[in-house]
Length: 366
Image 1 (spheres, one colour):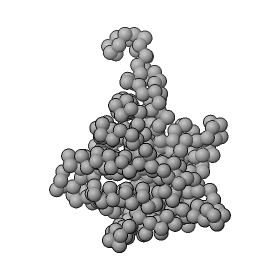
Image 2: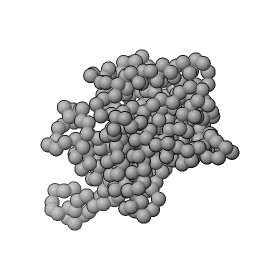
Image 3: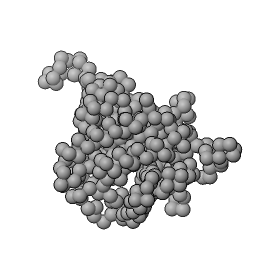
Image 4: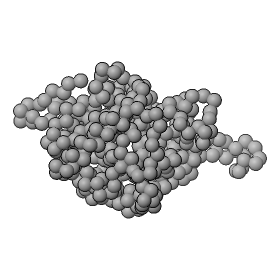
């Protein structure tokens, strides 16, 4: 996919490039063996506070079990929401395969009410199931089971009747309709699907939920650039949405590695991260003590990793403006290297907000 530049008077903005209405970041809320998890969680809260002060509209946290990262995002959001008062809190992503959907709906609604309706949950229904030995296996495949749980979760958020009491010993009088409480009436409209493929994006539109796509994609031809396939994913979502709902689709968020180096030292650091990312893939940049992936290729079979935009701010702007997937996004979410500490992350957030994002049409929140 090729983007055509507008007239010379607006030569930096390609035709079809959507101004970025929102800017966010994605963190794993990691911790090291040296400092421990409590320090990592507190630093995570400080990161959200710093981003809010810089005008970021959203902050997202990645869920990862059994490692040196955030395993339970909702209580973290409930706590962080008492310290950052405007920014939204999003999960990117929560895999549905290992979620009890009704309990998740209860926890999500409670969290959303505690932080004044600022929760944005991104969920996924991928085919990976690495922890069946812990959470229990199922008779069907992981994707089918994840989508079954996703449907129950969305119904529960809608306030649907999950069961009508039809006899004694069921905890309520006969005839009682059991629904999730507390109920947050608008939360379902802020649910997104984390989509890494065309099929997943189309399914999100069919469910009537939002879309976030990011740093790993699969299911596309080997010779198709990552950004071009990402653009097709976004276009497929918007096309299917308009067919089904006869309205304009909600904003689309795209997570990306965008690292503007404002000093020679930072440019060298970000170039090293790029090399690590290209050679180690999703295993790159881990905090001290984190588990070492076993048998993990830089790009696992069938998956592709997004490019890292790094260099001077002007070079980064040029790269982002020429990226077909980022061009179609309404919101860009900065993927923070998991091994970076609080100071490094705040510097990166600051440099992106002040040197690159304004050229993308972004205006900080007041």
